[in-house]
Image 1: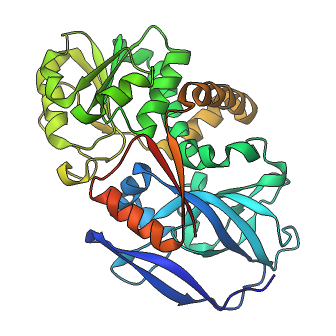
Image 2: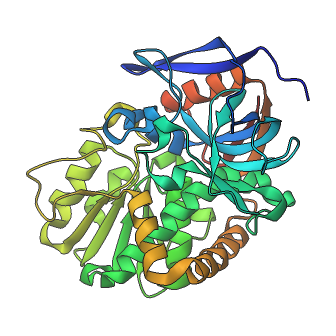
Length: 365
């Protein structure tokens, strides 16, 4: 396989997330022990927008270096080995994992097994290990050739939803009998709703969404009740936990002020309403009820595997994933877009709030 002389990357201006451009960069000779990946496909979801919004605070800009003042947004997807200086990795094999919005990536495989490896490149060493792991598809138990699109679009978001449900269950849902999910049309919210429906059916699931998305969210069948954002005041005064995927500070204030002491836990997860965020993740201080607390999935993933062990954790994830795929079947139309400029345009549309929840977008650079 011939290695190209250059790679193309999408550089986002860190201080102005609505500015992004295609940049050609020189590909140096491959280092000893390294592997060069050609990016085949990745999905662009609201999750990627969250990576950009909290990139400074949580370190998402550090995975893929870019010039000062710019960043490369991480994506989940598939890649093919086109050059290898690692005896354990062969040219032509395919992997799944954390990739840049780009055409190529060099990794330094360590802890190589039949099913995967860890990128041990020096600048990635301080970063959460869950993002540095790559699955080798030929022996990856999660890989289903017919479900590659779904894995890219839903997989990482689903795992976050699974971890939130596990965390809530471990804490007896903080004494609440109801969970309120903002941005209920988002894929992470749908994932949490699905896992809660499967594993905690006694907990009532209430989805909050924009007026235009109420029908879509209702049609998923994942929620017991769906309300538009303007109807927060109609929520019954019952012990509840909230999971905020929207990052809309004003909405968070409304929920806290309306429920007060009936809000038993306030969980902050993502940022889908970028223009209305307050603080790094929609946080707010001095509110009635509990202090909003950021949920950082990688830390909870480590805890899950420690508590259950890899085999049991894997079994539970797989069972919930299959259940989610059945309930989510047909709820999202998958659209393939060719070329890295399509990735740039899709990213900018999402930053601008132009997101159709019924559409899943896969880019083939």
